[in-house]
Length: 486
Image 1 (cartoon, rainbow, N blue to C red):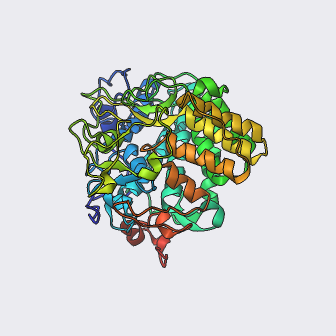
Image 2 (tube, rainbow, N blue to C red):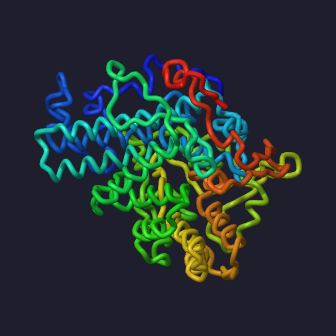
Image 3 (cartoon, rainbow, N blue to C red):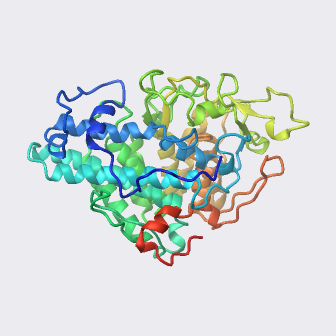
């Protein structure tokens, strides 16, 4: 399942999808559809970037790629990358199924499927973003306002995917900001024109990410067609995640988080998804999601959380939960959706608990960002700025919304930060891997008890917190000559 060579005949990030195919194949991303161009013969970049409708169709193609289906279940769209992170923590126990080698922290070798997919998927989208920015800049058919809007969208996509590449292929940023690991691309590339950019210091890539996302925040509007599209709040939320990693501007992080969740924590965290299948993107608490309708817009049994976690519906039923993690939830917490349905705790203790958080259907929407994450990031920022009462209040806003019997802990100091990080695990279990994300950025270990099917401890700053550079990139990019691919 793991060491499958990427046999694609093209090399990313040096390739670009056929632009005509994007216009033909990716003409929608949510309930609302754009008209398909009537003349699709010999589509050129001049046609694609001739008017706003065609450019939006190009943008829709990028978004549709997020719930794509590549080779196998565990290397689909962005959801697969997030779930691979989720299984790396100590709350989740993965059966011998899809994602099992991610669960074992061994799926990082340069010719493995996870490594190739993660590199290709993100650089593919970086290249799409650069093509969008270049095409819009050179367009003679767009107004200045239309150009500004689409360039902001392009910068969002580029900033997002460069950030994902930094997370996946680099160690903790603050350990050595000058470490050289990945290339930076800020212009569209093709097989005919690109030679492969050399890797550059992480600080250079992070600076590009920060600038791109700040520009996106400034240029994107509040309104959008639906929650599967991007707007200012989505850009603010992604930039909040970036600042949670760089940890050098807590005030800006708080400001962005508050703007993303709306400023009133008590109302922002209200949700009706808990206990109802966790599948409805119209819930006011969901900020950005992948829409599915069960027919022409769905990834069916592919590897987002629902088919992995649901044990009551025909699916993979591959995910179980650590009893120590389950014990962190009170009986009255709406997130306490754990059950022992197999009765095998004595012989296979790792299979004791399943969760009904997700009810799987082909129409289950997939969460990418929720407002509650931004509230907890705000609490974290307030903690680091020394505003302890405000951090406590923000934390309790979420806790009391999930548990009517919750009692504020009154924690301060490191205990308060630990409580905030624990609340992130409890709120987002099975979603995007908050434990892995937080352990990496705070230089913490990931430790598992003996109940886990694969009971290993990952020391702080271990190389297993990042993937190796793909073998094809090492072989074909002269910038990697002599590179130590640890």
